[in-house]
Length: 555
Image: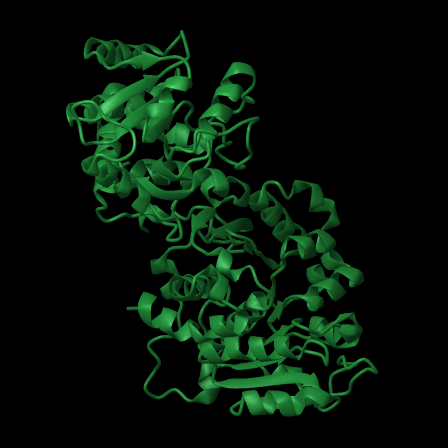
């Protein structure tokens, strides 16, 4: 497992560090190593060298421009240097110590450094580094005003594990720093962000880019922290695998989705003797006269999955439209209500003949009987959109708890609150809320958002598996706001349904394709946004990028 897959809480990171220090690694030596890596990375970013940032959409080219502007003699004048002036924000703890070592190393490389440290009491090691920096005649300031002359700021005020709210003079100073409109690079986590929940503790630094140290922290996968984190990358300082395994276990309960884990469960390569029935048979139940596009988008998503047989049940009145758009699909016309919704599934339909069912997009609430039929079936099910709204009316937990077959629900936050009203107040911590929902209902819960969160129960083998009956959570670290458009979720429903049907037909682990579908869907959006901007990715366009994205990331 790559180190990119691990995610830790503040307490877990603290335990891992304790093991490292107990084994003989001096705190001072680790600080020197980590800060040296950060200082070199800052120089690389300023030179425009290969960024390993995880969020492609955050453009760091303006950091390169800082250096170029200095060389051209534009902007603020820099005494005896063409390099940017860098302000370093120093806190009282070891995060401040890291920042001081970064300041020292950049000073030795010829950068003009200004150290902002408004704290009178520092930890011993941090104080030692501060004393040495003063001996080098690096200027120290305790007011924000002198930082106005800087081109770039490095934030080392507070690191991981902060619990208390930032108030009074420190909060006012952070607010003033944010209003300087100077790019900020944060060390480990933006000061003021809760490591686990991503909550802003009173006031927080808004970083342009964050260097997460050692292992990814939970906050980097929480939607509410993203505006403060900016783009991000992991600074790997060689934590021993044994220490990670000792604290997180061999199979961690929370994992980031990586390219490697996503492509592992793709239905590629195909067996040379495969045929359409060995590649899965999916039934999509979607659409209404008002929302006919939802059925088309879902089916296009399923088409991209490579599923062997695609059937789609729609109101009889829109069947010709679906047939013209999807000539390879078996389009099933259903009885409909006066308003053009599916009133019920055809009597002759045999749900047991399908490997999986995906239902919900564009149905409207009038399709309740059809949704009840699939909930009562023994088929693996992906439920989305109005399928979820109908489920909420029926009673989420009682209905899903009785289903024996795999059920995957894909709510956005509003639907999640309707499905689990008892968890509505817990949505600040999306990860914990998704885990709680999966524990309540027994289904696989896919909570949509900027960082999709997937939680499911891992029953394991109770006779042999010590991890039996625990909740496993997967978090997608990469996406794009280009996907924040109507219909994007319909595409995901079809793609996921198709992959699920294929996995079942091939006797592969069916739950594993959920992370594959989420990753693939996001990568298609990212690729489309790169070529068309974030404004140019409507849901139909998204479907046209599914195969190009697959070709790119499955190399």
